[in-house]
Length: 554
Image (tube, rainbow, N blue to C red; front, top):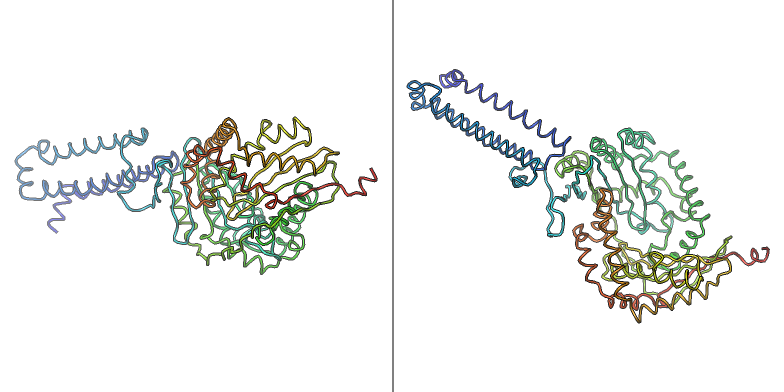
């Protein structure tokens, strides 16, 4: 009790209490500033370090110079303003002031002090990039339930983008449930156990946000764009629909009708997509890429509640999702919110692997689709590799040379010089499994599809034999790199690129190796790719034209 009384008499307890209160206030200010003003990720750690060192040092000096016999004697013999405690206190105050000034300068200068996030445990800061080409501010983290999160801070504007890549697409379906992945894209906006249908959009829009989604053969992707002030609202909304989605019978039937109507307008009443649907169904005889993403009509009509429940439980599990955040955020706050909102969602058994491999095509395949059409359509498809195939990037450059822009080879030859077609275009699939290189041409009303097909094969064979010129290659490389850097100039482009490389290539850091890989491609690489792919026995040809009786009536 005597020691306690002496501590109280000498104001040591009051000073300690004041130090604790001041430290708490300082941390609160820093945390608030980190949220509203986007302070560097290590700022809170720096302040914690300062507090953690300063408090014990202050107690040691108080004990040594205020409680011990030597300290008491000195206090009695010397004016307090000349005591060791007083002078030491002044020096400590000066040192703390200097450190605080340096800290503030580092906060706003961002490079004057090292990053301290590794010194104090607490908020997970995620894994740092491994390669030197990757921006050092990017962080990644996998939660205990398998949810993969990647954060790329960009503080140019106070906005944020979130992409959620769900590994569920047309390839995960089979006859009877085709189109179910796309159907869930609709259902994810139609109510949970906590929110009514449409409330997801209303809450997000009220907070200044917007959203969208799309479904492909391989994935379903949900996109949110919002101000950083709505960050926690978005986490609440997204976690709610990921774990509490409801399957109300009336809502299911309503959305079934919406999807069926979408199919009629986007496929049945669209000649381009009608022909493409038949092309994929013909080019693939084993792999589920043969199924239309929107689903076959009979399957859309026949989905059951059990189908929906099983599919959602299997594919909408955290261990089957990858989330990307870019914009005015810090990795620490994203990981904290992710742990709070998504951490409690349990993982599920991983979905069954797609084991079917499309067998090599044994010969040219042909289809003719008859539909009311003012102009004939000619589509030509060749089997190619997956996103990770070594031939994918050279083929991308080759397609750029062949069909991108008015100066491309096929446009100049077939549209401008020969006027055999009205337009020509193309693309390649870059999915989990081998896909197609796809060309599409629109002919004039009196066009000859067979003659145009022959000219297309001649041009493709010319590349397979003679390759391309150095000028064409440099132009294609420049276009691809310009598009690459332009995409990364926006937070939306950053989120899309990071997610696609992480999901389809297995590592987001491969994104930043792309410029080097593009520069290393030669004209010989393009020639070899063309010779391997553009073979008649590897080709499926589709023609859409008016039925003969319609032509007679005209």
